[in-house]
Image (cartoon, rainbow, N blue to C red):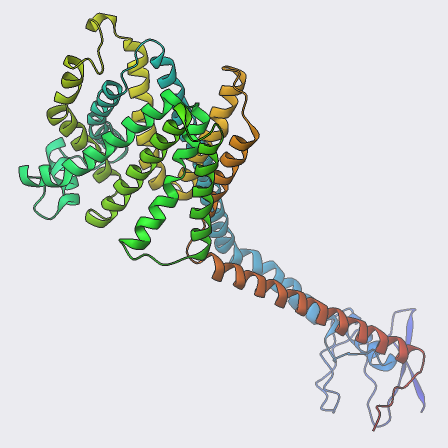
Length: 463
């Protein structure tokens, strides 16, 4: 093989390039005509860098080299890289907006959880303070339920303030009356649909207040959390909901915690009666929710506000006779109206109304599971107040029972497809690990081959 010296006129530097047999030498630094050869060399650039680099890579036998790849591919890559941010701007903006909305929804949900838990803890604690000077649980229940009438006016005020659509209160009330059927609200529907739910509502709250006269706020709030287990059992039996083994386990845990709570002070006295009253409150609450789902289905915020206000009206009109009967029979006797602790009574009613509003608004604005967690967090909240303020000492059995009931409550919050989702996640994780392991083996084999080629070793496959 001979060599040819190519020198540019007017330049001091020269380049010595290998001349391949049968190939014409090409001048560097000058545009040469198109040459038809089997190498199909790329065009010569003005500064000659492209030709020189390509020839050097070709002569040295660079592994994986393709002619014309080095310089102009890098330029194309830089151009495409420069164009990429422009095309990806909209996609990144959409992803950022979705992520921001999710974060805001979660943060709003956490705030609602805190408010729900605080309002429920405040209601329970203020009720116990009220009992020190006014021990009339049914009157407190009746007075607090009357405040539900304010739910729809508050909803309508918020609706007018946040939307441009303006409707009269009567029009909005009729629109929300579709919860009871296409015909809307009538006297027959009012008595047929509202009466059973209003009675269950009053009974649930009345039993809850009776239990607070026998037990601490922590015990009652923990026992009330067992209503989730009763909801599942009734839905499985009455509504034919899907059977889930984990929820059966959670229901058994709730029942176990109830039995342990009753056994803490022996199966006698005020403790056992308090446990029975709290479990009765949880049972009627579960029946209320299952019947609501059976006859009325799901409701939006406006329909829920309409329903609560309707129950408040029913309570004011038809159940007002019960406190009078209890008063004249001296079951719940109080003095003059001026001697009543109106501050505590209004505090209980206001906190109860805030709790109901937050529960229904929170389901619309955030995730329903967070509202349930807010109810559960009332147990440690009441426990902290009982220990710090009332200096209550909990026995080991009561603490164990409370923990078991709360754990069962958390298991009941698992979605129906939790097992399928978990298996899919584990399978995806295992496949990802397998792919990573395969990539590591491939990289190690390529590295070994390159080292063997560098050392001059040749691997011969076995026959």
